[in-house]
Length: 396
Image (cartoon, rainbow, N blue to C red):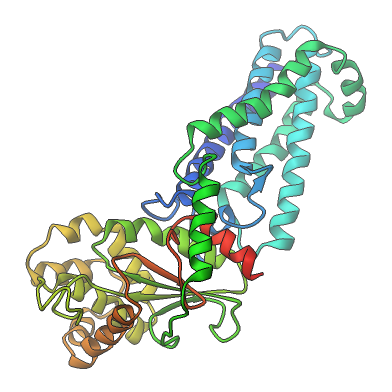
């Protein structure tokens, strides 16, 4: 007789696992397509960072994200458990045996992924670790329900003889393919390969530009030791720059030999000497660039300030008074001393540093923001993960 209470608890845990996998799948495709509006909810700190794991070379199997495989597998597992729950009289029924098999398969997959996380990656995904814990709890609960998951091979021999089982097996890759198409964006469809190839070919043929690799916000490997150096020019009120930020940061942090240099390029003539602006501008983009420069100079919190500004970009875009901008910058609580931050932002030397970085972008003939250079060569589409991965493979 099947014990329904442990099985019901595991059904609830499976629904929770589906939720985790659904969220991670959404974030994966957002990072792929450069449409992520901010960091993932499960990014706790530099070590526990779901986005970094999602952009690692271990995040896909057969071209599809592991999170999507987990989503579909757990959905099928939920169906099988529900059918077993509705037929509690026999623990040896087809659905009971299939539930036992499913719990073992999901547990073993979690063990493999956990080993990869702890041995091959420098970062951890909180939601991934939670799914590993849920699969372990599931194995125990299925055992307590009387379904004998430890008799795995015996169950397999009996279950594979049923055509229904093969239908379930086939449904997993089919569902993965269908759902991936539903999530498809500009860089995940079949046309993406041609787009990536065109952008990579243009990058290979581009002339090498010279940049000051000691200025700007630095992330990742030391610049003099990095195999791949990404230089990005961006304006903090540019929506495309906001969407590019999570992908670039995660890609850089997921690889030990990649360095990222973020250089502000305010589309604002009050600090950008480009003839295109001819002194025109309200000074707000410049003020935001100065805030990141000063946060880095004073407290090494430039990236924190940049992230806070991008998170509040819609509000910053609505401001017209510098006093309101400064208040918003202070309200971020990134800087421990608002007065020191404002003093630094008003210092002429700070403005000179922003102008120098903007001048680098002018010399490199950038046409807008965001603009990307990899190892000195201009790369169009650097906000898209497949483009960055293709360049990474060629350099490697």
